[in-house]
Image 1 (tube, rainbow, N blue to C red):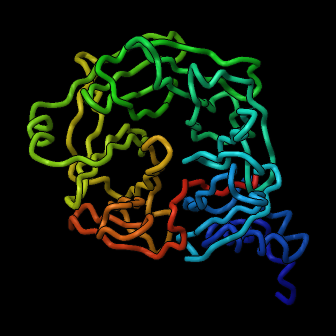
Image 2: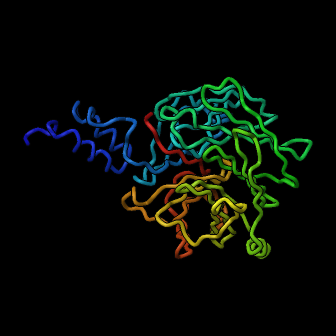
Image 3: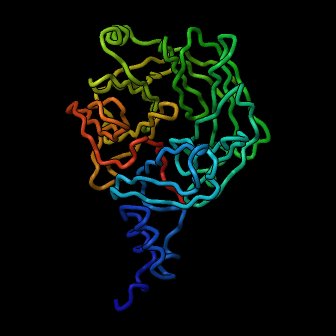
Length: 352
């Protein structure tokens, strides 16, 4: 074949799905018309999340340039995003960040790579501060993307959750009780809201449609005894391969991982400790709600599964924030290259 542009479209598409980075994918599509027509911006190769550098929009001059660190290429990418000016950006997420204006409290969903922005209705932040973004791409499945928040400061033991979907004209609020609460971790999945009290460690599973508590899940007795003898630092909630995981990090002592087991539905669900996560890789977000993202290592050449990527301010007592990888099987921690001392939040780059 004398001309690259004459390659079959199905072969070009297959090649594009095996490119290692989004930058390579964009270069591939720019080669010629046939390369571009054989691929779609909404169907790039699988992407690992990029780390968005933390910045304070209220003090940062000209905060429209965002810096991202890519593990895949071990490089920093600077992206011009004028719509991010004066806005706090929160993840972890796929494609869209929750953007909150630092002076007006106006909120939106913002794709920093395309500049696409979707306005959200105003919410009284005294009632709830939303900071969770669902996994589904807005363009593909906007109806299932959920934003959720939780009130930390109330005069009673009742917390207030607020959620909405793009296109809604107002937030839906929901109250639920959590006694002796000192903060919480939460995640949304399949129309349910999972929240763990930071002090009591009790988990509540709430149906968002009916606003009812479906399950109340205590810690197992064995875990209660372990917590009494080990110093816990953080607890994360992550949806991974269809399961809800609770990842407990200890000071200089690694992690414990628990899966919420629903059984056959005849009994209440319970937390079950697991020894590993197979081919999955977890990316934990220290600064935005103690949540994370999960990916299969089989989709990414050069990466291995059964690992946890996390940001840490305590490991080796270094100044600033460092990026680490925890090998679950070998119970070892490796410090990785990362240029952002103030940390950041994870986002999977998206062109749609």
